[in-house]
Each structure stands twice: as structure tokens, then as C-alpha cells.
Image (cartoon, rainbow, N blue to C red; front, top):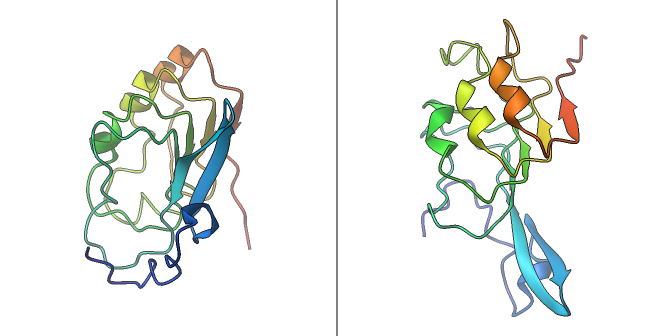
Length: 142
């Protein structure tokens, strides 16, 4: 497995729920991995890869420095938590606008777009997210 930033160095032992970046939840008396955290990759190699049929329902992709389109994440149909905070989408020529595909993530309940360099209007497709409970569009000025 390619791990240029050494993010997997803590992944030792049999208890994957204790590994850095792995989030587990007790579902009906059985522990399951429900989320992976992919942070701080400055390699500009594109986007983090998640299999299309991934059962994970959480994505923490903060400060990743995307160099490709966010629309490639649309197929994550089980997604209910998406953290894209700290990514500078404007700087990386991804047009700085919130993409309409986000409205197709029907299971989404938490969406964090804070400090991500987005500009323009909030697309009406956000209104399609009937399960959305938290939307963070905040920005921190220094």
C-alpha cells in the first residue's frame, strides 16, 4: 500500500479501532469501522481513494490539498459525515464553488466546509439533503 506521508505507521496490532485515523462504532453489539481520517497530505497527488462500495459512512478529508475534482466523491452513497475543512479549493483552481454533487449525497447528516476557500452562492442542491443536521461554512480570519 502506498503511504507517502507515513499515515499508516500506527497501524500495528490486531485492534484496528486503536489505530490513528480509524473510527469505530458498536453496531448491534458488534464493533465495526465506520470512518477513516485522511489529513494533511500535501503531495498534490489528487484525492484520497475510497472504494466505490465502501461501507464507511464517515470521511474526514481535512487539509488534503486536492488537485482533482471533488465530484469524484459523488459515488459514496453511504456517506453521512463529510469533513472537507481546511482544504483550499480556491487556491487549487477547483473554482472555489461548492459543487452541486454534494446535493446527491442523500445520507449526509454532517457537512463541514469550514476554512476551505469556497466562494459564491450556496447551491440549491444543498436543500436536497433532508438528513443534514450540521452545516459548517465558517471561516477563520487571522
